[in-house]
Length: 109
Image (cartoon, rainbow, N blue to C red; front, side, top):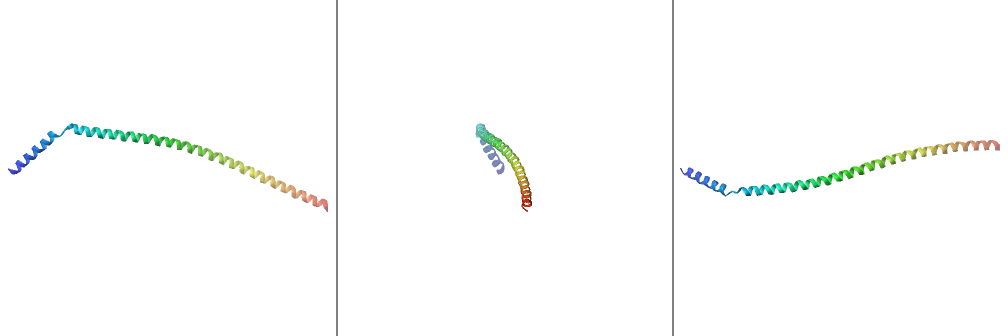
């Protein structure tokens, strides 16, 4: 019997708490949470936009760097070709010089 009275007392206490519980408190908390989530979402969108702008900038820089590398490779190839051509002309001149020296030596004898 004692336990029944205790249960009844607890039940009344819970009912009083429920009666005193205001729905507006929940709504206020929910609104605060929603507002906080909206602010967080806006901040994330701003950060996302900043990151996208940085990505676009870096992509352009990469493209420019690749173009410069291609131009440098072309220039380097042309320089090698000029160097090879120059070396060939030097070899030809050396051969001509040797031939002329031999011819001069022949004439001197």
